Image (cartoon, rainbow, N blue to C red; front, side, top):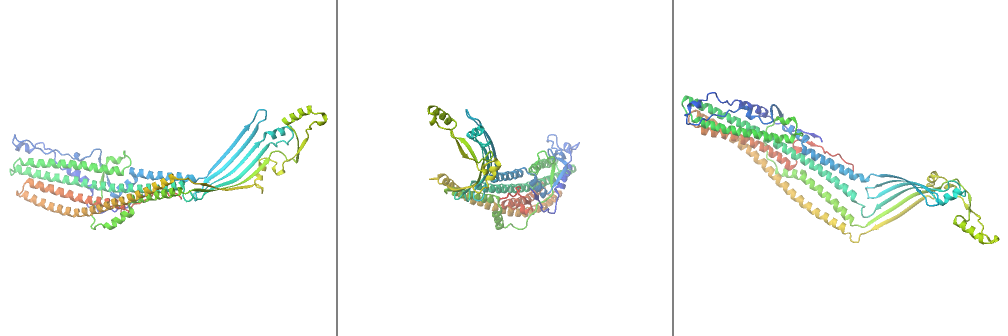
Length: 597
């Protein structure tokens, strides 16, 4: 299979590769536990000691991942890897190749067959000499696809010995070698159906069905490739969101660390009570827990993407981190529902598969209707037959009138009859074999071309079941399946319409969500800046400041979530309309070569 990929790479606002490095750098800014914590000296003895966690950059490291060698990955690279390496696609590709071999196997029924049968036999009875016979039969037979006829050509040779003639030859009455009879036959048989099996027979039906099933497996392969393409896009944008979320959580922790620094300064200056540090430390611990969860989600989403784009479970990429370099984009124009429905109706692979299933059923209906007709076959045979007898040419041969038991009986009778009335055993003249019959195999082969050698036979075979219930029941069953397929098609069309309408609505909703989320994030930034100034002026509390910081983090996550959801909804729309290959400039070659019809 050959793929050519060209996905547009949008201008990069933020490289997540750099963001990943920034995550670890930001984590390194988190200070470790001091040797002498000021809280220990300022908090009364009965107050529980609250110390910020010693958050180490190693907490961001994920199990089994080497952060030293990240792999930058564009969406087009991820798609290319998946279409080439995904195991589900490989299975679907081999299904198509297997079905191709099924078609070729069925086409083999029309391959002609050459048969050669040499045979030797020796026969003897008590009191007689043995005879030796040798036969060679050659046959070349095959089926004709158009019309459903069958043919066979034959060429047979035989040498047969006659026990009586052999006995005469041994007594000298016949010429030496005259006991063998040679025959040669060259001919052609043809059988042609005239009613049943004329326009369609079971062989042609099975081949047509196998071809449609081959097209179905090719459709299944493309459907699997489309599903994989959609899954890769969704997994890619999920990884983008999780990395951005991790980045936002690190930034939120940095806010809390800055708040802690300011509170400690105020405590040292006597402007705040030592207990205020506990509030900041609690918030910091909560945000560290959220960062850990965000890091776990990065690992989950990255593993989901690797499962789609890697072939081997032992590939070295499993120990490396993928860094997406594409950023989500937002379409300003709305999607046309009418165009989406038209694309889905024309392109959906499920509908194509049902159309092919309907064509398969049409072949069944056509075949079973043909089987209800009576059978009327034309039969024809034409042959050239040659004959010869072993030995030299003889004109006339004298043979005793009595021999064997007759001779014994004659001699007994003569003992009873007077001398003048005895029965003589005179010789009878027998005409010898003509010259064109004398010889061996060579003569019999030459004789098949004589004018008296051709033979032919013409006939018809008529067969009609009196009730023919089998063919009628099969026809009725195929017609029932035809109505079922029609109902399945209507049901699948409704499913497609629902999926397309929902996908278009999702695209429009996520598009609007992006704009509202951007406004919310911008306002959250303004609110946090104002709240920070009030806090520095002593006119706000840490509680309100924490709320503003958390609100900004949530707004940032909501914005990137809306952007990635919009890109995932576009991928779902491409799946619903079966336009993923077209929209991503992907050309998928069929894994099955064209089989000659």
